[in-house]
Image 1 (cartoon, rainbow, N blue to C red):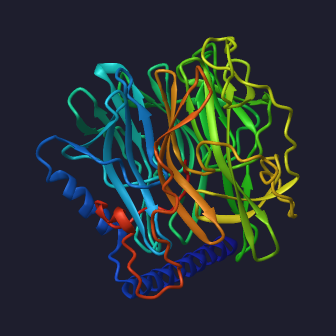
Image 2 (spheres, helix red, strand yellow):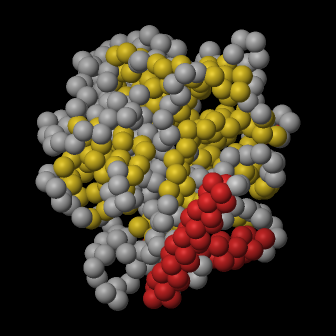
Image 3 (cartoon, one colour):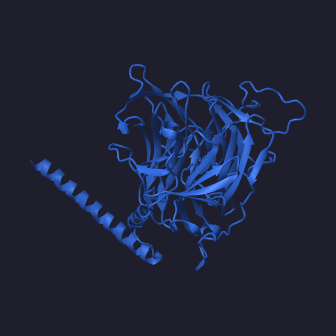
Length: 510
């Protein structure tokens, strides 16, 4: 009895200490919000959701292109020559804006339309959205993040939505047993199901990264109870790439994790590994197994914030991303890429895509969809410093998912010749429609300035001869306000039309 009572007393003491800590943090947060003039973020989100309920009818308006942004969703219509863009964020150095606007781009007409529909999702970024062809076409959206203008507060969503393209109406799907609130996760549609992997939750006082898998049935509208075997699952991460292979496997690669080294120091890890979530032959609907995969061919440099999209021919195209390099103990230089490569999902082989003007008769591509060059393997850095999601800048190990050795490395991109086409960037939107790849927006950093892009490019994957600029580079079209500035206007140029004036900081993204 004595030992039992003693342990119980210790438990009460620990609980009491934690309660005191929570109260101190709450009091500190309250003082900070009062100083910033911000309301509690849960109240703000509730207000935004109520505003969406006030819309009574669907409206479609021809409009200018979307404002500069990152961490949005960008999909192709499953049946029409249209592209669909939703949400995202803009940051001008002092203030974040988050959006929930829904745009449709008519490719033949080169025309943008803003669609407003009753009772839709609140503003967010770092979410995921996919399209399926069922019922005249559907958009499925899950999760994401909303941030206050100062980024002192974050709110993560765990809601699931469907937008029916034939009626232009949103519907919130209230199915129990779904994923917890998160952003930076990845979602893909395959075999009449939605597969959601990973992501993170961060409220500025604590954080958690996930490696869980959730499967939603597009037939029964319920979250399925699944079983996953495999001795070594992928490490928790956000901002990874995901694709559904023709053989039923769900491939996961790259991504980012942050973990505690000690009370004051966080360590970031950039993952360069690949895993396949493989259906079990005995019950492929609900039983799966994690299998480690070693892709062949071209080896992309470790980066985060890569834009990616899968073509109907079973190739996942990837563009850009960022790697941060330690210049010294206090300074970090971001190295941004603008290379284009793809992963063949059948052979799990990477290939570098060369966009060059062809003289005379063009060669025939093996699959009739593109012509590419095989590149030599690029060396993977032994030690790097990587930032993902635009928030964290931390030291990372090389290709191993658990590496943590620190060190300085040279630039990975400074020897690359300048290429015509899109500027280097991270967290852009990319999709494919009718054999053409489209790239929109994203972020580029130079010194301490972060430029949010609003340019728009197209690349014919059959010809691969030229990036076509549909909207010219806008990397320097908005004012950057240094974080130390006092009393500056922080509305962010043309982005002040946000449904609210907050946004999420770059996380995922994407």
